[in-house]
Length: 168
Image 1 (spheres, one colour):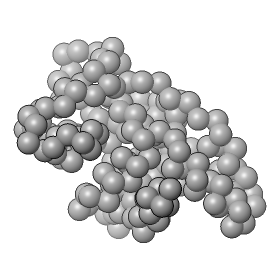
Image 2 (cartoon, one colour):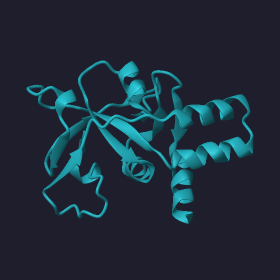
Image 3 (cartoon, helix red, strand yellow):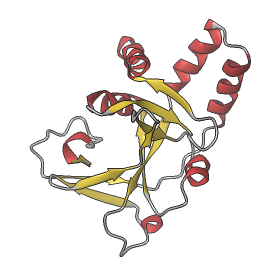
Image 4 (cartoon, one colour):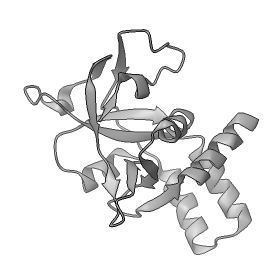
């Protein structure tokens, strides 16, 4: 379970606040990701790796939250208030070795392809996502678009992406 303190996307809000309201279910599309990923996959040069890495740091991602209360259609929700004591059920992926990865999606189609259950989506920038994953004790990394490419990256790679962002 994840709570308000480690899912607060407003990094400038202190954890002493009792709640945060976030915009949810915002559609996302990212065709450039697929072009750069295909280019890197077909020709894994350092140049293509750098282009893809730079793009990974520029885009927003979707993460999924399983709603606690099914009384409201989760697709119709546009704002979500997360209170300090709320437990949030994030979508996760696990390996046979019981490693936990956070599934992240580069666009709405990818999420809908992988998960057909009602969920709430949160669009987050790369910096926030990298910091969030690195703060968790149980994540081994993230997996991009698990319903199609299923590309996982480790905590070390995430730390490297964050370091690149901090140098800019």
